[in-house]
Amino acid sequence: MADGFFYDAAFARNLGWVTQQEQHSLRGKRVAIAGMGGVGGVHLLTLARLGIGAFHLADFDTFDIANFNRQAGAMVSTLGQPKVEVLAQMARDINPELDLQLFPDGVNQGNLAAFFKNVDLYVDGLDFFAFAARQATFALCAQLDIPAITAAPLGMGTAVLSFLPGQMTFEQYFGWGDLPDEEKALRFLVGLAPAGLHGRYLVDPTAINLKERRGPSTMMGCQLCAGAAATEALKILLRRGTVRAAPHGTHFDAYRNKLVHTWRPGGNRHPLQRLAMALIRRRSPAQGT
Image (cartoon, rainbow, N blue to C red):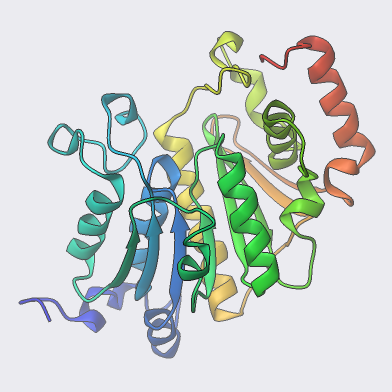
């Protein structure tokens, strides 16, 4: 035990929203997070402050100055350092008793079994364009009956989808299969946020280019993602509260002060989803914007 640190004292202010028994339950939970960048890093720090006791963390990247606008671990002092190690240290500064297992090569077919071993919940923190890794992680979650959450930072808001054991899977919802990456990007974007709340205040559409794998981001979006995902995590791990699993979703946009609950039976096979994708393809045949 680190000098001056006591678990019960550190997380006592959670009590009231959770019981003492529930706080101790959270202490015994193990959460896997792939990606320690924009959303993944804030996911970790938020869940660590909730009192989660163990994490599996994966990321192969290092911090760059382009990360400064949105990534919790990106600072002058961490330039060039491995993201997974920086965030692990930040989490240990919150709770030095954490049980952390690090996967500095990211997630891949060689380590997925170890990454998900004894895990209670998966929280997706992968880059938007990490299609192969995302497809593999969610597929194994479905196979192992591990609940999984993805929260996307869209503009100045977040879109949240939860995939629970025995219900609609990630693949059934998004319908990626063996499609080209550009089509996966389109299906992911439309599937995450059927309400499209963020589109109306995009001042420069050329900033989004799915073909070139680039798009704008904000720290507000990442922080909202972490708050929403951690709340879903609490409900799932403590088995209380309503969790709207896919094909239900939630999109909150702070800029527009709007909250929308979406329901797309069949996921991207739903007529409204197919129409939205067709309109985007018609507007930009190369799926550039």
